Image (cartoon, rainbow, N blue to C red; front, side, top):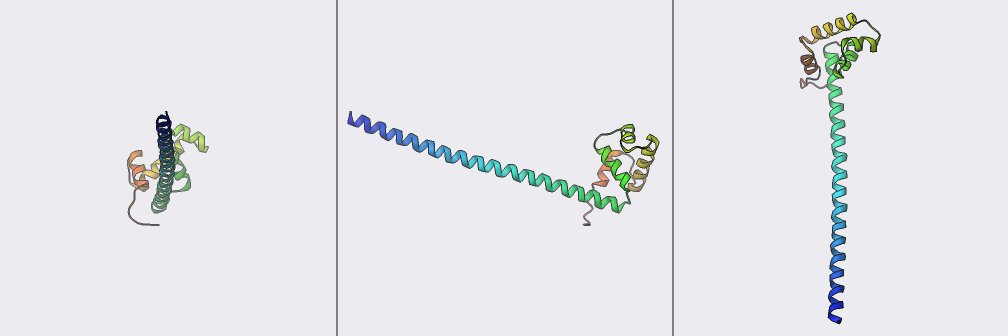
Length: 126
């Protein structure tokens, strides 16, 4: 009977040890997960800042006006001419004219080319 109690006691100690080890691993995994999540968020924010800096640099380079920048942003967000016109309080014709001006300044023919060129990294820092 004494041996049985001793064996049970040893088994309980091993189980406690395993639980303690699992807790440590769980805490370590939680820490790693938190760190990687924070790192991902920071990288995403940095990418956003870099993209915005490229946009601003290229807008200056191609003499894009503030109104044209606003229209580019709305196009990028998926707005149609009519929606853009309502949003910025101008006619649909005026929106079309701004877009023509943007295309001429960037020397492009469509929205995809426009967005590519406006975010293009030419390797020149501002």
